[in-house]
Length: 495
Image (cartoon, rainbow, N blue to C red; front, side):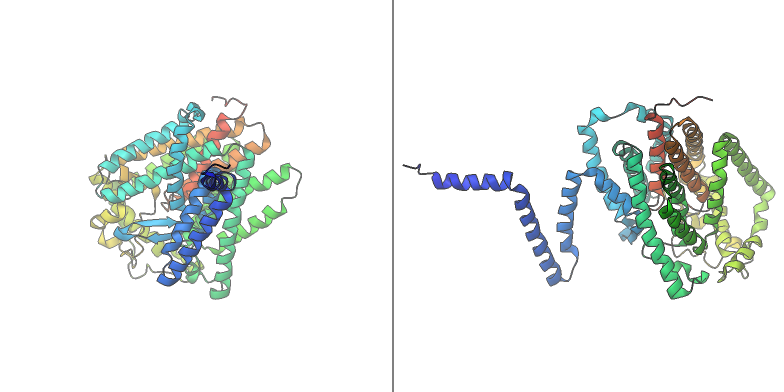
């Protein structure tokens, strides 16, 4: 005679089978049910919000199953990322920043679970140590900020960039093959956006300079962000090409990609990008002949002499523009001519803000105003005689010089710490390049340090390191250099 609970037993057995044997199929059916319900709610309520539930479930499942692939995907979305304005004057770059924050929330417990995998050499590396000093001082100035909410968001965005694009990338990307895959993915998404922009620019506006900013959306805020990501990525495209050539292949695909990229830079009509691309080529020779130290101190010396000359006897006042003649130019050739004559509105508006910056630094030289505080504080420090037609700043853009921005945000000590950090990065990059015996690793080291150099050049006229289009490349380049240093069989020679 069968036991009286046989039916119950069979039910429990079936549940056990569904959960543990056919668990994947059961989960799939549940997920499909959630999708159907969410779509119905979305249609009936005329809102996309219900669709966030199945998207969120899928993302959580994906991150649990394969965290590394989500990191790859996050890099892939960088060129596609769009700016979303939030209440309170804050902004969010989607999907990059939500993915970055989500990865950070998962990466922290991963570090706690896999604490045995932590590499003390990474934490004690000179690049890491000087970055920590820079971040520590930045944190102190955040506490003392004029606008605590803006400064905290700015500081947190810096921290999650460091956490994901430097620390997580260092631990999850194990070698050359990972970096090749990473840069191929970025190249693919970048090319898609370049082709879309070029097509729109040509078809809708006939490649007119005056309409260049209208074709960048929704992926890029303006032509500067668009041109900058291309020149910053150019060294890694060179790495992909050289990797093909070192394997005896033609590398034709990457040559064609290079042509598209150069065409995109040219049609962006961005003077800083033109200069940075040329400077990148020259920097290759500086690295090759070990002239980095000489170049660094020469650049610092020239900058100090120039600032000293302009401040002495208030000579900078002689640079004040003619308000009526300093206008927006609709022709690129006219823009170049106006630049030489100090009648270009873009350059003169920068000067308007730089003058305000020096007056701000004079008032708070030690701690500054806090990260990200320039826009909310600079109005009362401007001089009317430097005003231009765009000085009302409807875009709410920044100071357009990263080094001045740091000094305003973090005081003169903050600038000194950042310059010391950059010195260590450039010198270590040169040493790591010359220490590599593997030709492909040598090219990768050169690409990483050149990409950093390009970013530093662009920062003379912009402030882009804490943006979604440029920041990830800065920190992944640092990760590449540290990885090559700590995981190569060669010992880096001391000079």
